[in-house]
Amino acid sequence: FFFFDSLMTFLKQAEQAIPAEVRMISGCADAQTSADVSNVNQFELPDPAGRSGGACTSALLKVLYTNKKKPDTDLSFRDVLQRVRDILAEGKYAQIPQLSSSRPFDVKTHFALVPKGKEHGTRRAVLIGINYTGMNPGALTGCHNDVHNIKHYIMDVWGFKEEHITVLLDDGKHKPPTRANILGAYAALAAKCQPGDVAFCHYSGHGGMLPDDNGDEDDGFDETLIPLDFKRTGQIRDDDLFKILVVPMKAGVTLTCLFDCCHSGTVLDLPYNFQADDHEFTEEKNYKFTPLLSIAAELKANCINCTNPADPAANCTVS
Image (cartoon, rainbow, N blue to C red; front, side, top):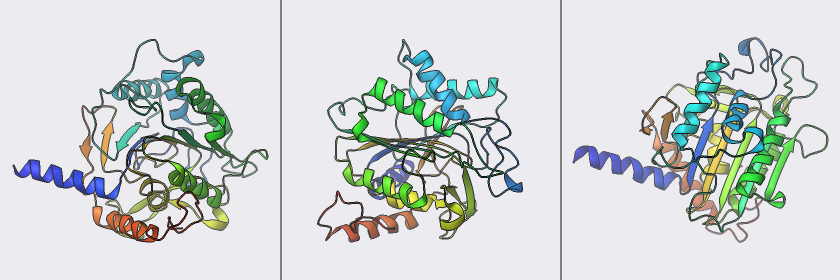
């Protein structure tokens, strides 16, 4: 009975902190760097070592969209993650793909960006690719390709429509992936999604780590995304993503994220984790709900007098 009560307490806190069902695939564990980059500690940004794009994105699409066709047989979440890991291992990449979630669920469930029961909801996406063009060292060459390929996949296989897809690229043609634009796109996505809707986020670029500034990280570091203008505006902490994207997402929304960057294992601070060599979800050890519940309570208080929740500039999010 004690174990059952403890499990329910953990789940109840997870539901209080994170109303939506959120699932995240990350390219590697927090302590790992992406196989696409090297010499992380020697530069302001990692050196691309002659490789382009994200290994995780490429492997995932090889599993789910070879020759621009979906698999002939249904694959489970476990199947997908294991096959991605096998492909990375064959390429001598050491990184281990991770799957985390706001709720425990059966990893034998059919892999789907649009789960059963959500077929009639609106499908929205935010796709971000940063090549850091002109930065030396640190420039990447394949992150734009990652975004284009993922966009084609979600439109072709899962029926996402162009008008509901936000793309940020540093290519001079799209809206640039600055800190403000990234957080603004995530805030708008969370504000627009309604119960029954489906959302998808993809990020291909650099990730990093900064010393934890609020005591919610067991390893003492916040995981980060590195926006195009990071030298001027700073990195985007996992706490920022939790405030802007995760907590404001409404109950009844299913959000799936793919973060293909270094140190991305827990970049959304989700309470349940599954690795490709596991058999089921496990609770994140030493997970600290208190700071996250405080964030959720603060956001809820800020939204009490919100007159236009569809407006990302309204007081419904913490900037």
